[in-house]
Amino acid sequence: MPTKLEDTRKIVLTDVISECEGITSLWFADQWTAEAQPGQYVMAWIPGLDEVPMSLSAIDEGGRSSITVRAVGEATEALCSLKPGDRIGVRGPFGNGYRVEGRRPIIVAGGSGAGSLMPLVRELVSGGAEPTFVLGARTASQLMFLGRLEKLLGDSLVVSTDDGSRGFSGYASGYAAKLMEGGCYDHVYTCGPELMMVKVFMDAESMGLPVQASLERYIKCSVGLCGACAVGPYRVCVDGPVFDSGMLRQVRGEFGVSKMDLSGKVVRVDH
Amino acid sequence: MSKLSLAVDLAGFRLRNPTMNAAGVLGMSPPLLKRVYDAGAGAVVTKSIGPVPRAGHPNPTLVQVSGGALNAMGLPNPGVDYFVDEIVKLKEMGVPTVASFFGGSVQEFAEVAYKLTKAGADALELNASCPNVAEELGMLAADAGNVERVTAAVKEETSLPVFVKLSPNVTNIKTVAKAAEWGGADAITAVNTLLGIAIDVNFRRPVLTNTTGGLSGPAAKPVALRCVWEVSQAVEIPIIGCGGITTWEDAAEYLLAGASAVEIGTAVMTRGVGVYGEIVEGLERYMAENGFSRVEEVVGLAHEAGRYAENSLDRCNIRV
Image 1: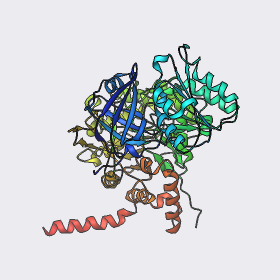
Image 2 (image 1 turned 90 degrees about the horizontal axis):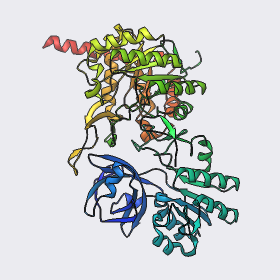
Image 3 (image 1 turned 135 degrees about the vertical axis):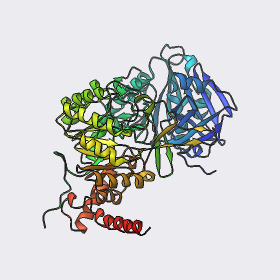
Image 4 (image 1 turned 90 degrees about the vertical axis):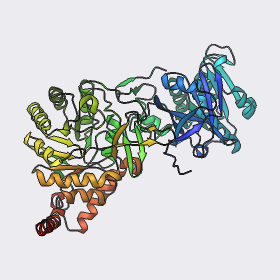
């Protein structure tokens, strides 16, 4: 295999799993992806259409890895409509990934944000840590990875739904705040809607807890050159996607507030 | 011996040292450009700004190749009317700012230049050479007459120093450089990326959505350096060298070839944003060790030996 991680590999989808309505996991075998760190992403290429950044939702589980895609636009809808045996291009993994820290971390996932947190949970658990996982969604049918998380975490998995159809009734960030007030956690990880992550960050700050949050922006080059994914002085593609508390404090004026569109114009973050 | 200084003067635009980022690299947002300046660059260059917003080409817009990268971003930018505020922010942060810009016609070039000047940029870089929008806009730098006309029209609208950025994808870059000088250019930036293509053997198709793209990085350096060499023989105005500069030795080569300053881009991919400070430190050591106290003492020095080589070639030709 004469490839480097930055070269595009043509990969065959071995499994396509619908996680819930509009969210699909694509499984494949790829040697470079198998060596990724939790929180890293790959660039997924649908030839003739687009190339989009996708966090890894599984890394080398029985030789296979996965991305988990929410259908929100043309490229992601195309990815979600693929079948086993279909081929796409993959390059990477890119980005910094999560630092695996904390003996009793709390992990707050909203919607498809649970994807990038799955490899982290596995690594935390296998390292002997005891994470609490708050899995939030709009409604019960949108809860992802329930079975896999229950198997990994047992009672340490807690669920919230905005409409109260299962578990805690309300936002995941609200539930997480209540749990954090208990005071027994030493680290916070979060991935999901940015407005949720800001809330989690602010609450953790007030309690002096270190945070790692995975941010999302338009990524074009993925190698830190073009600046399309800038948040403050940082590039999500190489300085991120995981921002720690120090970085988040520095970009407080943008985090949960604004982002650049494809032209570089600053627009509001609305979810 | 006088005290060593890395400061350079480009037609009245004073830089604390001769390094800048290349246009299109990290040039979208003021905080990121501030980071480039804090990392050691003498000044920063913005993303090329046009008359109206452009989203750019769909991904893939960049592919890594041996010795560099091939990109076809497609000039994404939020448009000049929006970007004037970003220039203001950069100036408030105390960052010396070169505004790169383009247009689809002589009139548009002039209008964008006027607005960027009013916004408070320190200098303008006229992008005559993006290889990735040729079908829409045509590549200005392919035609010496157009380069002269556009440069002259822009100079009418601004009192700022105007750097004209040329393309290596021309038959004779000396002619185009001369045309820019005749049009009133204050400096030449040489050069933009080399037109190239990358094909994915598994999918059997070009990788970039735009099919072709611009080659940058170490692979492009010998060609870009030769362009600087030739341009320095053709014009009297200063030259800003650009193409594959990754180390201080690369930067020193450009100075020796005739560049008064340099732009560094793709090296950020391999060396990180810290590359600006590394190159500045290396140049300072080089100057100190070789007894230079000012950058202009180094500029063009290699032409002394080069002239000898060219004379010997002439003698060869006479014998034939």
